[in-house]
Image 1 (tube, rainbow, N blue to C red):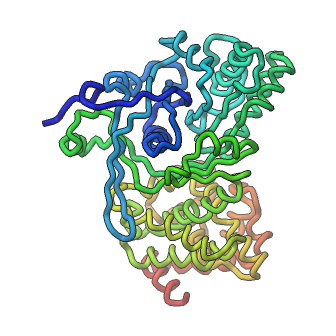
Image 2: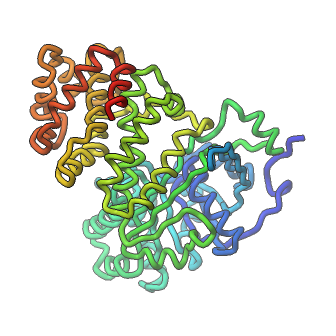
Image 3: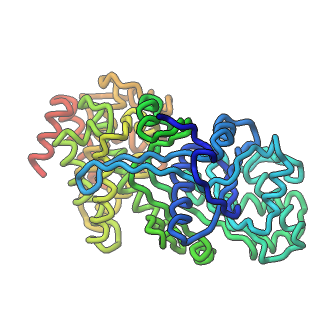
Length: 482
């Protein structure tokens, strides 16, 4: 018997609204709200969430949340210690959800509430941008404009009381997310002549925390929703599916205050607080994202479609694990045992049969991604250990092969860059071709050949073999020599 999901069929607990959340999407609900719900249950916080649509527009999710009295399930599946595991949770932390465009009075009540302590946002990568905006209007068009407006109204309402500042945590997938938002708020305040007292209040009473969020969230399980509803026993139209793994790194000038007010780590959650998340972000990018970017061109040319397909292939599996162990981890200046455990936890996620992570979607903009995620490992191996990073060179050769004219693959990348590679393809002078691509094309910010002597000949060696033998055999030959 499937029951409706609302407050008549579920016991709900009321919590004071201490968090205003800009964003109602799958990720925040399966990541932030899921964690806050657990922390409430464990008694380490007593905090409810008000969820708003960040553009102040109508939203199917907001409407559905209201129909379900802000209740929904998070459905997690994955592998833990080599065994399949599943967790479901009925999340009750959201106290209300609305669009400020429809209910400006309620929005004002929330932003001026003395109980409010946090703003948490995921307005997508395009949300934190600086452009002309009327920050004193009822609804500024950009997120930085809305944040400036919100803080100014709160500053005025409480007459500059420094006890009434807010703690802002950004989850947008850009580097220095909250630091950038902070900068734009101050720029808007200057342009709108909001006064030195307001700027001082923002600087002294408010905190802006950069954060790194990590959980794969495919979202609403459309293909299996009827079976999931039967399993849950509720007619839940906002189920969110995700992986078991989660990590939230929160840093910035006010991180100690944030940790005191929001001690999620004390609820057994994988939340790390630190003065700066930069080194942590770099580590995660090299291990997780660098592995993805290195693996994709190899796996796609071996007929794989998903990350799981790739890791079910013993040769690809060994190649990626060895690359991380031999070239990536030794170049990160941290305790190697701790790094090995960190990497093992990350790489275990690649074996998750319940998450369909398509290689084609990961391959988006692989040229710029390879430079950002993989080249620094090549550079460090040369400068710190005096050696060529063979594994990373092989991944770059595979990437050139994938983007070349014979692969049959159409990359989703800068069309001029793809055209340059294909127009300059020359199998009679592979080394000269690679040198042109890395040094003369303008595709990359840095000149790989000048920074790492020996990079071009090594890449050319592997590219020749891929061209003549095919990816399967070239990879087997590589592994037999390493």
